[in-house]
Length: 79
Image 1 (tube, rainbow, N blue to C red):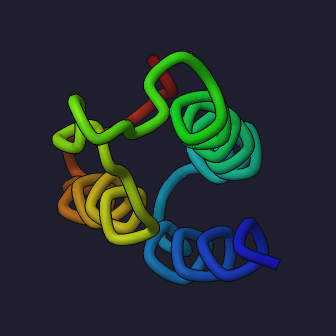
Image 2: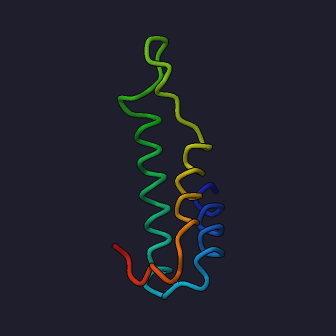
């Protein structure tokens, strides 16, 4: 469900970009959510001693906000 939300947001933003860029949206969302899941459930789980390792959905949304400041005139192909 979360992947559908972020995929929809990115598809709307990147609608005027090249097809190569649009084709990279789903893999980008999948990879980002995979990293988030591994951080959330992996060795960086928050503990009382390491509470600064807390991650939430807001952190993921900031990643996608960063993607949404891309300029169509400067993005021709996926990197």
